[in-house]
Image 1 (tube, one colour):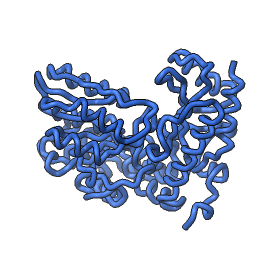
Image 2 (cartoon, rainbow, N blue to C red; image 1 turned 90 degrees about the vertical axis):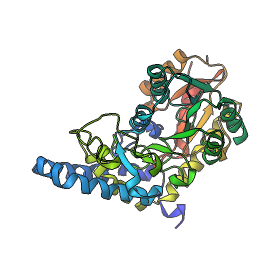
Image 3 (cartoon, rainbow, N blue to C red; image 1 turned 180 degrees about the vertical axis):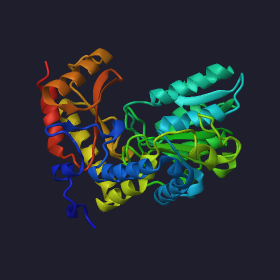
Image 4 (cartoon, rainbow, N blue to C red; image 1 turned 60 degrees about the vertical axis):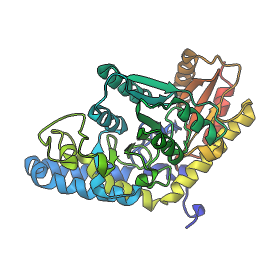
Length: 386
């Protein structure tokens, strides 16, 4: 099966409920749920509401475990090692809240760590009297070695946990995860991976990376309804792992505790099989290949037009490329917000604008409903900006 067999580009837009006329170049932030997955979710909601108490008591647990098995078939490993969370940050909080930290302990993050995750790590350290260590990964980045050197520089005998991005959220860098995990383990440090942007953009076998925990989203690039994350945990660390919300199943085991944290809408989790069916139907691995190539080409086009370099070489991105904007623009947060709002209001273009390393950048997300002309329209709008 080849890319040419799929009408990727604007011919795919009808499969998503996107607003007519909107230029949506920001799939990475909260995802966009396909129409047929929304329909599957609605059917699940109707089934639940026909007899909610019976569903929650008799059908929820088997449904969650069946969905987890589908996740494992796609992301690697065993279904019993996966539990569902509202999002990757929720999974990260569960790990941090479960750690027995104390004074003198350190948690390592980077200056590319997602802000919410960095806040969770800071909170855990402050409560325990531990220290949060932040290392800087160069940006733009030129080679894996730069990331490895940064992580290695921050490790110490006191580092209890390293939080590593698989794909950095703001900057879209695909980090050499297996290499970084090995560095941490050589230093005696456990690893929690923030894989929010990896499922659907990277060919994953999560257990093979060797980390203790891997927290991810399925509602971004794998088309699940919003509010659907997963947490994978190595069996060796499951006994001491608990959800951030402690509820009725405390002490009954890993999947029992996470499968019931109180009354909530389970339909995003139960819709995962429909989302994975949709992903396979529109090309499976070809989706990631298309998005990778398009994001890289779009970022290079911006670099050629406005000067400078892309945020990372093509081998270090997945489905998002950081593209440099004209140097005449003030590289401040205020200017970034103003430009983003201008693009949204005047041109109906949705794209993150990021100030970093003395310049403004556009984070160009690529999804199969996008095509190169979209990024050219964006470049023209930025070029015409006062």
